[in-house]
Amino acid sequence: MTILGRALGIITASLYLITILNFFVKWINRSCVMKLPKESAFRGNYQSVMKFLVKNHRFFAFGAVAAMTAHAVLQILFQWVSITGIIAVALALIAALLGWIMFRGKKRNPALLWAHRSAVVALTAAVLIHAISKR
Image 1 (tube, rainbow, N blue to C red):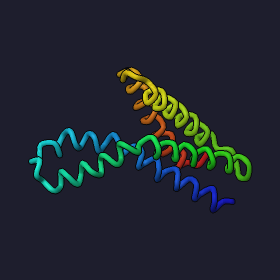
Image 2: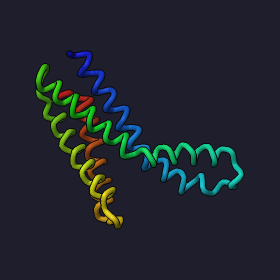
Image 3: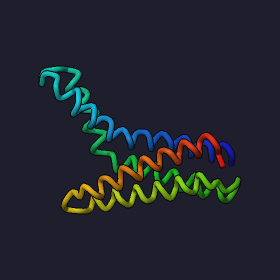
Image 4: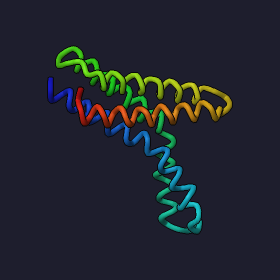
């Protein structure tokens, strides 16, 4: 069970990293890539990758939350309860709920986006603390 728990943790972290790339690829695109000529091969390739990541952001996030939940359940049932892990799961569920509300909403609410991003920053800190301390 230890190997499965560790594997689920690694899968969760990988999916989470792919999920938060959404913010960074958009930021890099706005600040650097859009300044390149439209005929640039790098710009075309970058925007293709960006389009894939942005389009599938919610699926990567759903996979990360599902893997995190499976990891938490497995750890609680067979290993030990980690307070930092429980906090990380709670923050992931909050971030996912805020993302789902924004996805379902007709209008983009800047306050919801701010809350979603804040939850993700808090989740990142919680995941790092959990990975370092494992308590």
